[in-house]
Image (cartoon, rainbow, N blue to C red; front, side):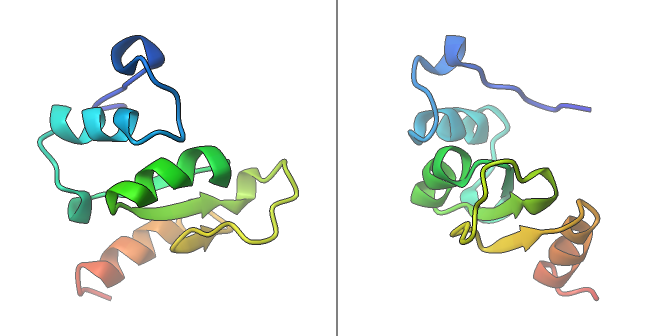
Length: 93
């Protein structure tokens, strides 16, 4: 299920610029502290999101580039770890 999708056609800019992330946040009326970006390419996905102040995760389970240090707030070995992060962030363990 996708609630919102922003493509190059809407933003006119490609990641790692912040614009696609900003458009997505605006479209869904969200603040950066309400979101966690999940990406599989740190140099492309994580940079723009982090520059806006979004929390970031690196989908290590999709690793194809030999990334050693992702620079993300969390590295995920399994997508289900995201639920633990959200619960921890929201104060419910």
